[in-house]
Amino acid sequence: MEQAIIVLVVMGFLMIAAEVFVPGLVLGILGGVCLITSVVLCYMAFGPLAGTAAFAGLGVLTMAGFLIWLRIFPYTPIGRKIMLKKSLEPDNGSSSASLLGEVGVALTPLRPSGTAQILGRRVDVVVESGFVEAGETVSVIFQEGLRVVVRRQTASSTPEKQG
Image (cartoon, rainbow, N blue to C red; front, side, top):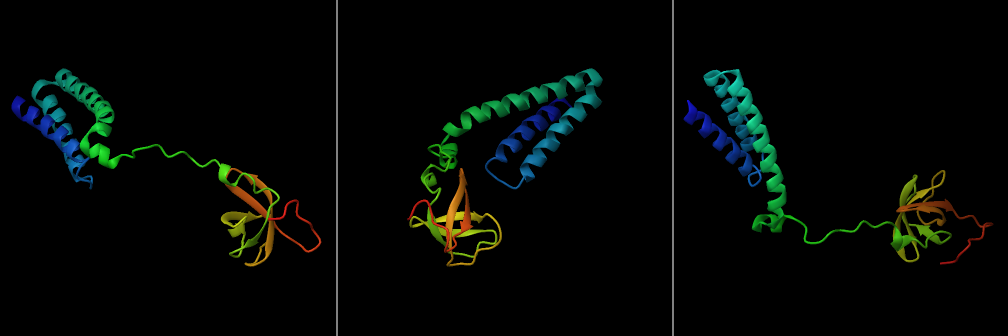
């Protein structure tokens, strides 16, 4: 009985480890079933004290193995192929920071969001109120990060900046 429990524990951990390389969750589920079965067999063969100790031991081993895997995996050959080589810095809107007050043309209908051409660039915009048809002139009235709010440019209004 002890040998069956040990074999189930080893097979369970191996199947869970193999799940990383063979997606589909089948091996992970089978590995979990093996681990649970080994704990149940331990309860049946050795009583509640040994079964509880086996359950706690498997929990500690699982957490330790996971933490070690998190530390080591990015440096393995497979991990280096899967992981990004450099960090991607989020765009905080600095590339479009100077759009406030600029004038552009709606490239798509803005109902209420769409695309406009401002300073020669395509920019995702949201209209302040109502709808704007493609080809109409719009001006940027608000900008927060990547959110650019525009207003339909009327003939009587004069923009702060010409672009």
